[in-house]
Length: 118
Image 1 (cartoon, rainbow, N blue to C red):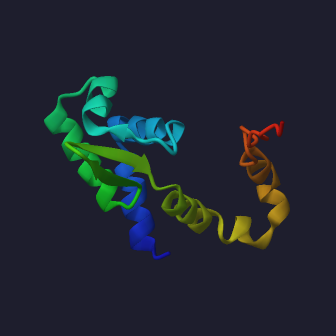
Image 2 (cartoon, rainbow, N blue to C red):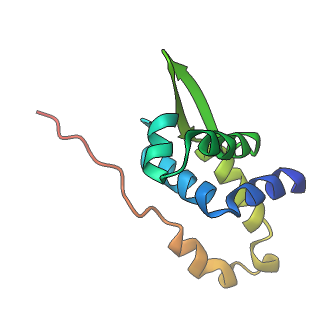
């Protein structure tokens, strides 16, 4: 990943409505959320939400998929992963022990559910 892509993603998240929207979309994976519902949940006018979604989309943090008359938005977790790895790539100047607490905090908070077999 290039610095410009990381800067674009971080700049997109450096605004409270966009950050909250991205976090909501992460929480609603993989179903996604229709644009109108996002505006309602975030309590912003639809045209304002549209502008925020455009910024997040240009930054590669979300994707939109048309379903009938709605656009369903989802977080692009792969791109977010790339941004996160870009930030951590040098792992505290080649001293992984410095980053160990951060890496421990990044371990899954929600282990995958194991489906019971009948």
